[in-house]
Image (cartoon, rainbow, N blue to C red; front, side, top):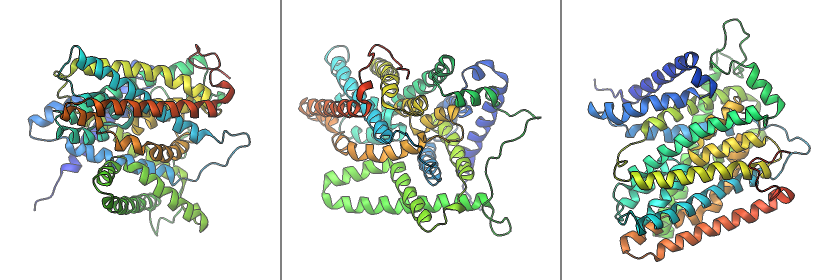
Length: 472
């Protein structure tokens, strides 16, 4: 009988890489010193394998993109279905808007820098460069390889040859910034004492360096049973709750896409782009499911620990698969624009994210900064991977607030998404009018981010402007 083993092969290869990465961390001091998550190590191990070895034996890596796409939504659903911690008196109620402001600021800054640098490049040393090249910076850094590839493929029909693979390459460079600089920022926070005392104690007490608990220590409880084993295994119950919620989110997005179809080509384009950010709708659906369960007083059947294990597993496999799925083609052809745009974008992001976050937030400031840096250079998966170094159980409100801010951010970014094809149209028409219109749109978002930042940060907005991290 002809059964497909493709998904099993991919899962087996990723699992083997994760096991090897776990072993390497127990032996290699460099990995321990920089607290590199095993999933990132595994992803880099698989990157050349899926780019060179697997294609040589006739095996495509495109399915990894599908795997990462779904694991991203699953991780968000599992996090969102957890019960939220009770609000503490004095908590920053504007933290959700603050996170949205920080995220939008990076979209705007990266879009503006990318477009301006592209104009400089095609006006001087790279005359054949497509005007849309600059938008691969926010697509690859802030949105991720899936969105960069999907939107880039659309640009290929407008004359931008290899746009999909260019987007993936930019995403790969973004991952390097997220992994190397992100982990460095974590270590800086530990060394300079920017983290709360409780977090510092956790980092020092748990088996952080090797990543494996010693034999003679008490094992922490990862999850608790909420169902009787005779009826249904607790993990099966929690997995079923996550999968059922995912199906509901699919139905929601399918219906929304159908409705947008009545709005003509613009609505159809928006509907297509919505599937690239499916995790937002998955999270919104999970919020509704959790609210309904709490209303019916049955929320107690879901254990936060069990949902955290599902989310953690999804993040580990997602990060590894995302890195392995990135294509390294077209690097030789676009090496100069890629190097210039990614380096400038990475440096500016590294400088602006800590500066903004230290003035925007009141609680868990460094954890929020690390999360935002991760999603502004990689994807949600890298943001969560970096956050897990400081908050391994997601006990803080950071991940939950990010989920809430993602919905707000999406609503505010709809005009940006609708206009994202303007530079590509400029290249196909031979007129820079649509290109400069996109530059103005990026400036408009930057102006909004500055105004929102001033409102949220208040007196701290421009205090000691030359200090990268403003200490309280």
